[in-house]
Image (cartoon, rainbow, N blue to C red; front, side, top):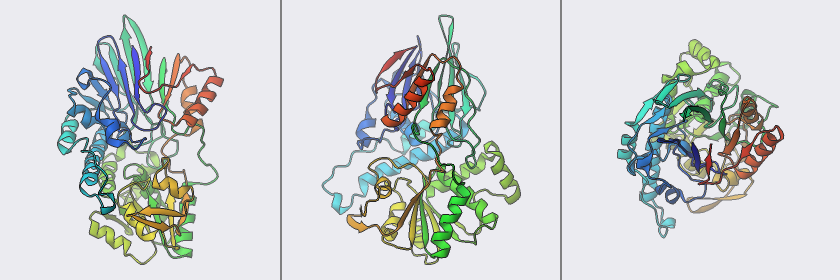
Length: 459
């Protein structure tokens, strides 16, 4: 059995791992690599022949895990894509959104970009449709025979609706080998989602390292943080709170928490705009799969009938409706994508509010180095939007209480659960985070490898 790491090697995006047995090739995840700013070029050609892949297993829907599946199929892959049902539905709308982003980049170049070349789209709607036809959905914690020698089980890990770790039992020459891929591990006590389940005992573990070396804050609750920021921004100094949030996962958890706050009467009614068509589609999927949410979400649903709607909430669909939020004069909360500010309607709200002393921008997630969100968080006094340099007068705040990833201690807890691990591989993290986890794991006696892109391991 051979493992080759073709993505998310010493970086966060582009998850893609090739597991080869004697006569069978398994691809775990097929994500877009957008770490280096060479979006199309990094993803256009695969380092293997897609026709040689026998099956694809998808851990969850996020675009850095699912987003290059249509390219794989366009290049000749003929097999099935195994995942959970929520993952299939969320991945479809995310891949369609990627098509829109590709086309917008190609067709809506501003005058200050006229000399820049724009690459062709990686794929179109037809290729997404071809991809969704390949989805075969499986339940959590139910073993599935891929073939006579390979058995798959999806283990729920929080992080996102439908997200799963992949546990494989593989028999070669009469010897059973066990390997697990964590995908992205969630954190405990997260809004809406159940806590991650422990993984079964395996011989080899491919573990994400996104929050290696970092710990989540524990000095306050998410409810308290949101309540205090809203009071300061929208009540004490009647202004507007803008929250950049990824449309799928983060936005639904935030809406649910705000719904709880207003339902408890902790704040007077304040208008909340959710400005993201993609978030609306994703929220309907979250409603559909309410039966796999956590106890808190189920109880709230039983009492209130809907986890994602209140009288003061408005989902905005059209650009005209989005403009109405920009022109809204009373105190309000605007939730919009994308979370790192690199595109989407959030840029409209930034353009009109970045110089507003009565505006606060609250970051609730990770911003990759070099993104507009990262520049604001590091305190840049001037940012460039729509070809203009704008002074930053709005207040900038952040919290990691809505981060969907387990922190350093949470990841080490996953690893410590393994009692007879032969080898541990760290992926999906920056170098500093991986190094921090490597030290902790080695100190506890684990055999650790940090793969480079294209590095192959015989297991």
